[in-house]
Amino acid sequence: MSPGDPKWLDVIERDLHRQFPFHEMFVSRGGHGQQDLFRVLKAYTLYRPEEGYCQAQAPIAAVLLMHMPAEQAFWCLVQICEKYLPGYYSEKLEAIQLDGEILFSLLQKVSPVAHKHLSRQKIDPLLYMTEWFMCAFARTLPWSSVLRVWDMFFCEGVKIIFRVGLVLLKHALGSPEKLKACQGQYETIEQLRSLSPKIMQEAFLVQEVVELPVTERQIEREHLIQLRRWQETRGCAPEGSSPPGPSPAGLSSPGFSASPLPGFSPPPLPGEPDIPGE
Image 1 (cartoon, rainbow, N blue to C red):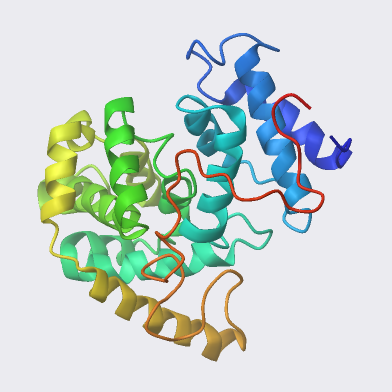
Image 2: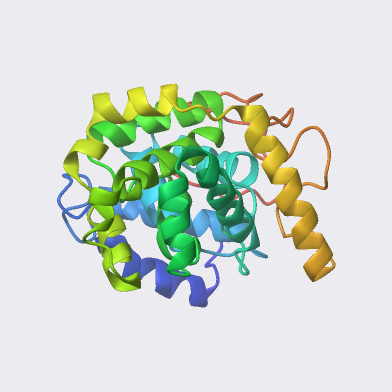
């Protein structure tokens, strides 16, 4: 395998011990889990040198490695970065900024109380949803809930990430009683960082996500609205986002669910990084 860019390798090395440090795969520094995680993340920087490494990719890759060999985990990571969450891990993080605006607008329909409070406090969506979305809730929810959310995410796409985020916001900030403890920006952010265990409990969360009255069509429509606003104010589309059309990237584009993730292994590409057994 190519030696790789030292700039990315140093950052990856520093991040290895932070990923699920109490899980048996990653508990030992230099153990097989951390070695595989290093290889997968390094391989991505070689596969997409123009993007390099983003720290939010590490927990995504770690969860994948818990369920499959390193080579399969690498190709699944590629699919997540390119098909499921395109543009999320680019340098400017423009796609996550756009999705933050989409989430906030949808919140007005789901929970006007929460939307009004966040508007009054002038809290940018990036302050509370960045880790949720970029890590697909792997660093937020209990493990059993993470697995259920990921099952739905792989089957139905990024709309599940939006629905989970809306459910968490609705139940954390969606009533006057909840807002009594959130008099300022700091208290509100802390409320969203220390979510009630009941909200995150697997059965409760999944039921709320399934029953949430937000359709894929509504998310797509909001995507187009926010995309046009972005283009009008900045003069170009955000990186990783499709131009206006019937199939925005990450929602219902033809390539979104065409490739089954587990075991996905396309034909070798020229210069393709060699993952296991290099």
